[in-house]
Image (cartoon, rainbow, N blue to C red; front, top):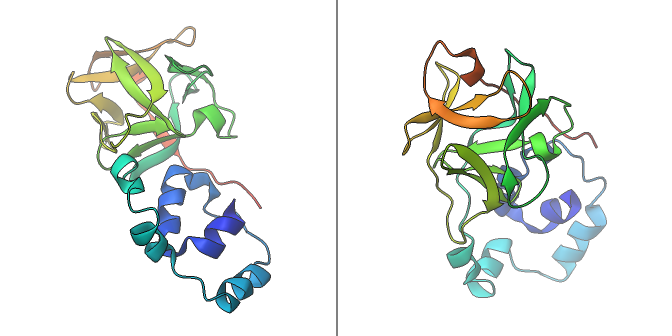
Length: 192
């Protein structure tokens, strides 16, 4: 994918890397032939393409704001990381951190949307569900407090809390003393 991104997307590549931040350091290899072809064919810029061909795409799929935090969200008390746990729709859980991304690569953008890949994490009562992101939105109710290390649902005024036993994750009243509400984010990158 990085060959396509680096060859064709120009400044728009940052939006792909917002959704897939672990790909930032992936080397696309030698793309000189693709860049030469693009030049020889006098292809327009990706911006031109978005404005003249795919002009309606941004209505349904707006450009993503930058990530505030991303990577593994690890609870130091239990050693568990937030984990989408598979199915869609499905619950957010916590399991042993494995360092490979996948279901444990969580991103929280500056507009409050928390997601794993294309799946948004939303509150359903005190549970957190992974669902398809609402078409046309990039915002949400989540904020990470770097001082307290808590992930807060602003509308409910509750914090993500892991279970000290099992894989349950729920929203509970925030308490700066609750070690089960603390998360340290660790960015990680795919190698080439």
